[in-house]
Length: 135
Image (cartoon, rainbow, N blue to C red; front, side, top):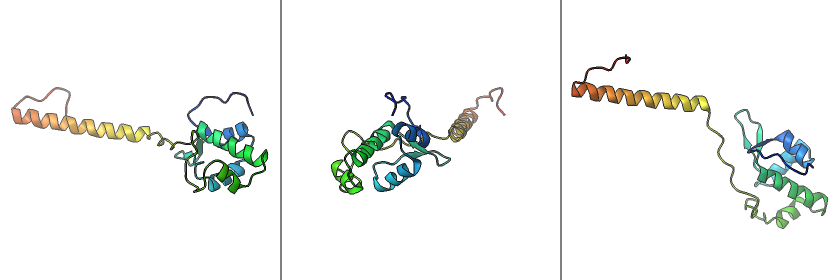
């Protein structure tokens, strides 16, 4: 494992595998066993892990490999007896995925069009001549 993990908001599955020296199938299995390990998914379905997810993977790996604990033992050791309780200091809800820029632009364009229509309607009611450049 590298001494310093690059500071990024999200890490791809292969990056997490390299950092934690685990295989992709192991991470996917652990996701099914530990609900706290829930990477965000991109629009294309690619898993995006946060630094806290990497810390959790490293903790799970250490407990299984170094201490010989079972999945149940790891849950108990990390205080996950109910299966969905957060680990103090390790887990916080994933931020929502970033908005799609093209949809955001469409929404802003639509709202600006509505504002211009309201302004034109107000001008018409007040008898203000049409502004040049507006058709």
